Structures are given as structure tokens and as C-alpha cells.
Amino acid sequence: MKEIIKFTKDFESKWRTTIESINTNNGLKSIIDSFDDNRKSINSENYNKVLKKFGIYIFYIKPIKPYDLEILKNDWKQFGYDKYPKISEKRFKSIMPIDVDKWYPFYIGKAENLGDRLKQHITHKENTPTYGLKLNGRDYFNAHNIEYSFWELPDELVNTKKEIKQFLMTQLETKLRNQLKPWIGKQ
Image 1 (cartoon, helix red, strand yellow):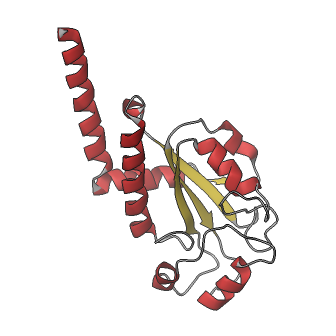
Image 2: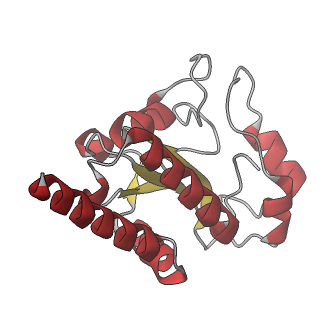
């Protein structure tokens, strides 16, 4: 019984330390830095190598034209596409004017299985019933100007209950969205 109590206390201590480090500004900066260090083009099939882990992913865009809100709306609303995230007008307006030589956060999400979710966003076509970016076949948002990256939940939290991991991912996703201001997505 003493071993179980010691294991539980040790695990709780590691869990709290990890949570606290992630929830600080330095923790968010570390996640953002890891996004920058691991960026890949969506035309590479590296997403097939992403493990089936909990985590947060991000898509970046290097715009092909100096977007304003109306041009972005027209380009994003492509004929035949449905069940895809909408533009966040407030966030998009907060980063204007758009520089075509710069990369911008485009979309942030969370997933229990990072590899599968990234693949869905990249390979699903316009009429696929799953909600997602559906980048395959888009005219203005494709392998020429979209990259992705991800952050996996630390190993210390792998054995944490699913509900706790989902709660943590939701909190992190919100904080990252507020800081990075992606063009597309909820809130």
C-alpha cells in the first residue's frame, strides 16, 4: 500500500509541475518555439509519421496576396466546400495589414490523435462530411503557402485520465489562439 501511495504522490507532483510549467508564459513560449522548430510543408507526408498522441497543432500561411477581410472571405469560401472553419473577423482585423513576405498562424486545433487529425485537415476534399480545413484541392490555400506543426503532450502526462488531458488541451488551445491570433477558427 505504501508503494501505491508513493507512486500516486510522485505522479501527482510530476503532473502538477508539468501543468504549471505549461500554463506559464514561458511554457507557452516553449510550445510556440517548438511549433516554429518543427514546421513542415503540407505536401510532405510527414504527418503519417506523427504519433497517435494528444497534442495541439497549428497551420501557418504565407499569403499569396495582400489580403483584406473581403478578399479573404471570397478566397476561403470556395464553391462546393462545406463543414469547414470560418474566418475569425476580429482576430484577422487585429493583424492587418497583411505582408505577403511573412508567415501567419492560420488555424490552431487540438487532437487526441495528432497524426490522424493533421491528415484529415490536409487530405480531405470539399465534400467530405468531417469538419476540417479540407486543404486538398483549394485554389488559394495549399502546399504552396501552407505549413503545419504540432506539439505533443509531455510524456509525464501520458497516463493521466483522458478527461484531464482534454481539459488541459482545451485550456492551452485557447491561450495559444488568444496569443497567436490565427485567421481561421472558433471564437
